[in-house]
Length: 202
Image 1: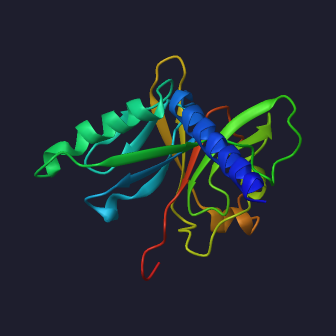
Image 2: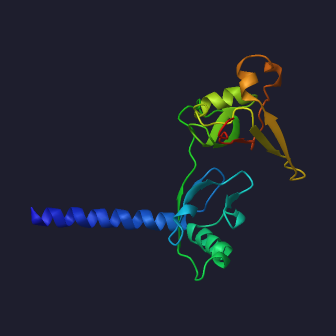
């Protein structure tokens, strides 16, 4: 029995080491979720989604390139970017969860990638069919949380030719009532939908 326990313990250690090695070698891609912890300041701990341009945002650091980098490289980049805000170099820990299709999404056919951020029930990458509108994609992402600012939703679209980003304001409350369904925007590949948290009396 003791021998069997030792074998099982050995297998667990091997699996843990293999998983850690895979994390170290994995190259981050748009749609992945990064879990970032700063030992010296827990208020900075958060998750961040890698956007279609390959970057993510972090306090005190602005936007940091992530696509194509390993976890270790991103960890070093975050540490360097925020170091000036600490008396000594902070201890930063980064892990990655590869992007996955939302469980609400349909079958993976020819389609486009859309990114939902903020107050939605399933933030992250959602794959939808070409021609899908904002309301349809929102339903596939699980809908809004009760904290969503429904009148201040943004659709951010980057022109792949010029790299210029346009921001469209979406009034979900009006759309959901059917008053202006003609304004239900058809989404394009790489669109980012940002749903902010509502203010106190909003």
